[in-house]
Amino acid sequence: METHECDVVVVGAGPGGSMAAKYAALGGLDVILLEKRAEIGSPLRCAEGVSKKWLEEIDVAPDPAWISADMDGAIIVSPSGHTFKLDESHAGNEVGYVLERHLFDKALAEQAGKAGARIWMRTAAIGVIFEDGKVAGVRANRMGDELEIRAKCVVAADGFESQVARWAGIDTSLDLKDMDTCLQYRMANIDVDPNYCEFVLGSAAPGGYLWIFPKGEGKANVGIGVQGTKCKLGADPKHYLDKFIAADPRLSKGTVLEIVGGGVSTCPGIDEAVADNLVIVGDAARMIDPITGGGICHACRAGMYAGKVLSECAKKGDFSKEALQDYEEMWRDRMEDKLYRNWMAKEKFAELSDETLDKLVLAIKDSDIEEVNVYNLLKVIKERYPELIEEFESFI
Image 1 (cartoon, rainbow, N blue to C red):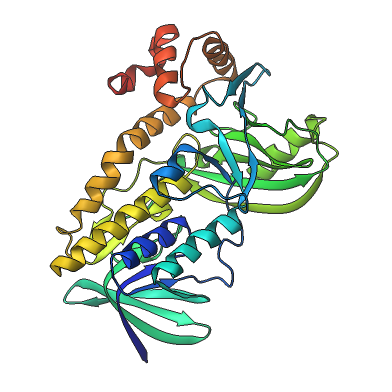
Image 2: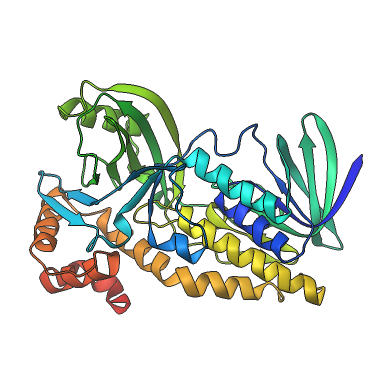
């Protein structure tokens, strides 16, 4: 069997994998980045909405080439149709860009290649190599040919269904209540506000929400996430999404150009994201916001942290679990409290009645919040409806 050697092999050329490969390569490591598909960023499995603030944090300049629309704000819609409109100054992480995600992912991979990473397309990891009980690389299939890639460290960046982490013995299993099943249409010939994203709450999307992310010129991503435990009908997301579209005159006569679907985790992150010679980043490590289902920014941050820590590990010649703890500390310090707080909030919000959600939207609408995020929303709810947040009041 053909064998290759490198310092780091990264499985998955999504945002997290490309960022890890980029920063590891910038640190002087020999990096191989594997992508099982024939095209980076395709097929699309994302609503494509991101906030703006974090791009500077990861040193990525906004590029019109991969920005489809620049939003002025967001609109929260209650089950009865009450609306809360947020402009950019108040919208926190709920406003930003709507991407052309396939171009964004390609841009990050291009940066990784420019930094020195070798990118191997149509190369799927099919197993993990162990030596003396530790990860020592991956087995892969490259366009029909099986090969071994031996590395000092493996980065599992292979997304929601991450197999690499499981093969390496990391528990990434999910409860149904911590998973949303999602469906999205890219629609044309519709009449929505091109400057505002919309989020629709309540029983129209049990345990989740509906979204409309404008993409300009009468187009938008229109999608839904439904909590796993609330899927009772069979093809639940399609049932609810079609019903919503048919009832909305702005959408009902639109044209569906593309359909994408998949699962999204809504838990607060896995217990351990490192092992000897192994790092797990992004969706593979459940670094997805349990409230919004957004994970692009978390994956990019985690990939950057991983690449920087791997560079330091290389200087010491140590990729042990203990040496990789710096990565654990970095991503947890930056994200864990928010992920956990949002998970607790998700658990509560998923059980609220439409009537209660109406009251909450009206309460928030009448409040004076400088920046709308889950933390500030919980503070408003505590003032109006303290009984709803008793279980996680310590996070406020």
